[in-house]
Image 1: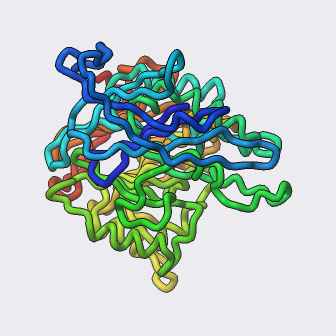
Image 2: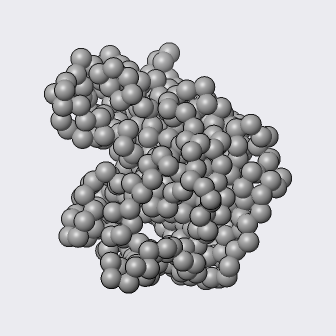
Length: 421
């Protein structure tokens, strides 16, 4: 159950997390820089005698009748940019070895490719989505928009499902950072079995670098990676005026430097624009609070999950609306983000195939199919975005669009479909 994520604000640090089921030790990770012969990750790095050691913070938790193993989180600092590292866990005959590549140094024209998945779960469809992503060689890091294990869909929130999910995704999460967002299935609130602490299993298992962006909670934070500034929000924490999340987001948007990180991306769980009858308008109260800031800051894209289908919006906003003028219809707005709902990872509840008809003008493309997406940032002005359905070959994109950066190149986009890249 090994997973890694970015460990600082700028990409020179990695948090490595793993579980030992019986013993607390060893709670260290050994790591070293790959030498020249290992450049592509084929070698094992034996030439490097000197291995660095990082010590983990170790935690455990109880949930109803379940006791977790020892959960370790080790932060490795001062790594070189754009460098392959090996790391190993365990000792003796039980050593497991993995690798990761650090991102390039933060800069405006640095190309980088993100995968995007939401609402993954661990069903047959989940496995198809995950295998499809892993065999699509482009993704260098994963933007995950919430709903991981769906343990809470089982009797007594069966926390063994958290362990099973960690093993299921390990062949990606151990090698590339997954940027975590908390969804409603991470809440794990169950007063009927006296479990009253929200997000308990999730917060013990998944550490994020929230303090690096001056956040007071791991549920909302920001990182910079290559040419992107990524903001993670919590749909299920307070966000009204003057709450900690509200105050933090206001400050974080002021810290964004578009000449350094031109791409401004937001991850949250409950979509603000959704033309499906499932979870319709559930994100509305958060939209009302934060949408004016997103338009003013010229956010490029907002990724959400929650609705178990796929939808991409036009660049629209509803900031003109107030209770007296009645202007309650979203309108085209070149400063607004594109909203993408990608809650089609696999989940446990099936597809949300009940779209409202007719398709509203703000909805550019929608389809009830499972899949994943790729955001291929090319430079400071252009990024190529594709959505890949499980039933298609990896090279086929059911939905695709060239995205133009809102800060540097705010032209109107034209979307394509069914392209082979």
